[in-house]
Length: 198
Image (cartoon, rainbow, N blue to C red; front, side, top):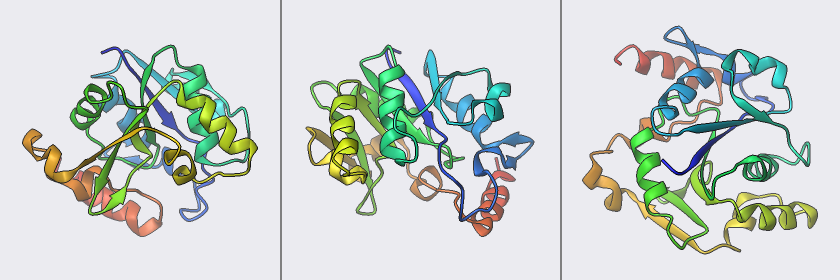
């Protein structure tokens, strides 16, 4: 597919207390689960991290933030700058049950839009979305002006929002799992229990 997948692994995992990307679920680290799901569909996977030595075992194309300590916006910017592809899936490192099929459907819908963002139960999910490479310029403008929330960037873009109703035809109905973010110890325990049924 003519798109790259960008995994953001720059968070401090302060609520978890340990690096959530490296927690194990069913014998794999969380970030290995994400990589393995995405590599079925994407020829290139880019990892954005400021601690590349922690992830050398993944053998992924890796880059660091151009603007350290500036949150997910900086990770998005770095990934897009590093990508050779016009269309890019961007995903956070704390989504152990993400759907590769859903990622593909969002990529297919990008067309003339700057971004494709799912809206599930009324909530936007910019950290499992598709962005054009050209968005890097707007992300840099936001960072330099101190507007670091993803919402600050999104309102500057031509965005296609996709809801559960628009995606139900693909059979992707387990939204709670697909968009599950593993941020706290109790959520890690929940993820391990869910994974037992895989």
